[in-house]
Picture 1 (cartoon, rainbow, N blue to C red):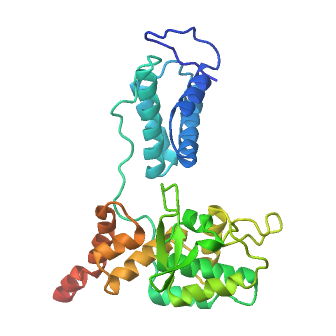
Picture 2 (picture 1 turned 45 degrees about the horizontal axis):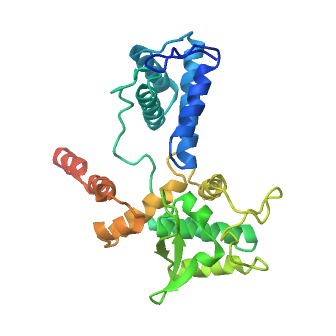
Amino acid sequence: MNELAIIGSKDLEVQKGITEDLYRRYIAFIDAKPKTIETYTRALKQFFKYTQEHGISNPTREDVIAYRESLKETCKPSTVQNYIIALRQFFKWTDQEGLYKNVAENVKGAKLSKDHKKDYLSGKQVKGILDDIDLQEEAGKRDYAIFALMVTGGLRTIEVARANVEDIRVLGGSAVLFIQGKGQDEKADYVKLADPVEKAIRSYLKCRKDLKEGQPLFCSTSNNNRGGRVTTRTISGIVKRRLTEAGYNSERLTAHSLRHTAATLNLLNGGSLEETQQLLRHSNINTTMIYIHSMNRAKNPSEARIANAIF
């Protein structure tokens, strides 16, 4: 493990492993959710590994920029952005604590496109995928219910994984599923269950015995975790496998594509921007506006119009 020189009013003797000690102290300092801590942990370990491999004891601003450029060679822009943000926060803390100057201040991450990185499906394609799922077995009923729920409610994988049996309730005459959304500490939001979706979930639940409150809505069918809560990784794998089996094998089609599909189909079929924002539970309507931009460009017939004028 390389070393960071300690400077300022809290001058300490530099010793082997001091960077690891700084890292541990910083992680203990920040008040964040486990997922954020996990991201920061991964990002900082990657930076420390880089400085060790390059024999850097006292990182400078130039070293941070060089590190960013090395990340660009192997990582996606979103990953580069997240890693640099974590590094900026870390050095901001070391500077505030008088431990090490802020050498990452104002260092930019990567330029991110505002367009979606994942594609969406048409209503006809979604129906074809669902029709292709064998409903004779429990796994098929579960996968069908998960796919239908995500594509009509715009749910994230974490929201599906957190759902419990008792989260299905009746509100205003409609069946709803209360969910714990992104960045939320409780299940305060809900999505309405369209009749075919509620029917699919009920059909799946009939396959399970002794249903009780607190049990996960969707369970694993693997030998290692049978009956246990499905993970986000499992849900992503389920969606990806069903897409591939139906002939849609593309890196741009993933579980998150179902959320994009829900938004796009809602807008294409008369849903307003505000309704779509509520459906997706976006706190900022500008995030929802990205769908409008993508749709307007897709419907823009400029190329065909020009070609007709020429040919």
